[in-house]
Length: 82
Image (cartoon, rainbow, N blue to C red; front, side, top):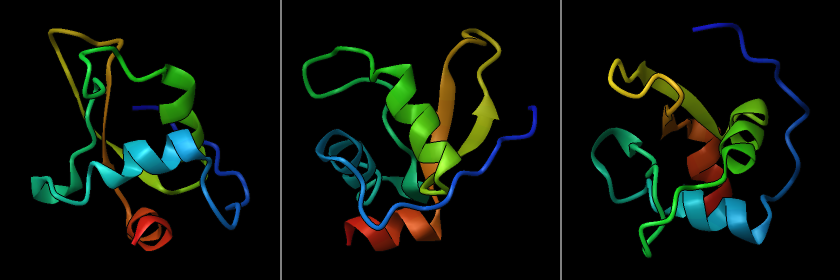
């Protein structure tokens, strides 16, 4: 995967970012969902902005869906939602 540009960490995620990040707290390895509780895809900008701020990090490439960004929580991500 390519390098991810890091932005300065905001003190707090937006409500949408917080909701997405919080869902990783109960998942093995902090895996973050690709879809919300209604089956709708998480907006790519939400994922990218969390990665850029260091709250999430790419976990692995999905060979069947290369456009999907599978991520997991970072320690910083856990800290902002705990």
